[in-house]
Amino acid sequence: MSVADKIIALLGALTREEVDALPPIERRRFADLCRHWADFADACPEGVRPLSGVLADLRRGLPHD
Image (cartoon, rainbow, N blue to C red; front, side):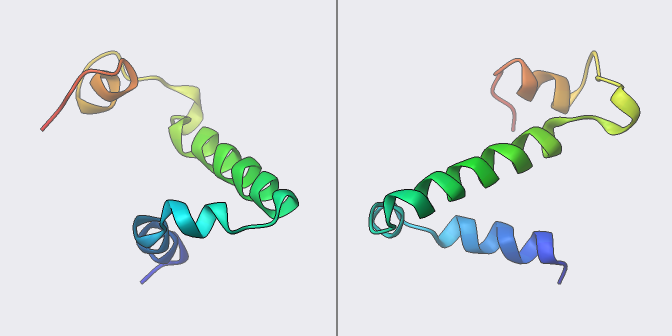
């Protein structure tokens, strides 16, 4: 299992109460790291943005099965 897979599993199990229990500086650090990796994950390889397909629909906020 890759590190990314492990992190996805951990984030899936994370509860609001656990985040609320973090000291303010750790909450800020956690939020900053999540935003950083979200931006990184949303970026398409080599700067190419799909114009159609599942990824394009999700980026536009359209529901997808």
